Image (cartoon, rainbow, N blue to C red; front, side, top):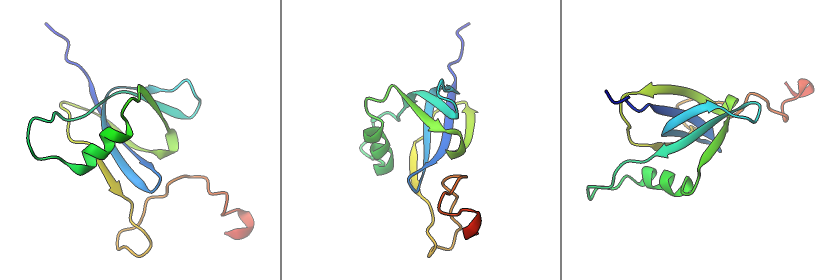
Length: 115
């Protein structure tokens, strides 16, 4: 019986955006404080309908063998049964209705004397 290949959905924040990517391997990185994501998966292009955000992901991660994501940027990692479409969503800004996620836990501009 063939072993079913694992697929992980990784959701993380970076530069004011929320990324949702699919990958075959997720592990703790050799660099302290990072998660290593390898073998990033992209949907098949068998139809004429093209998702621009997935195309943007494909361009951004083209040629990337392994990406290291800081622990504090990871929102969620799920092991899923099948691959979905990758996405890039923009975080809400102060003028938007929805509250924005904090991009990092450490904010040097908000020291003890500025709180």
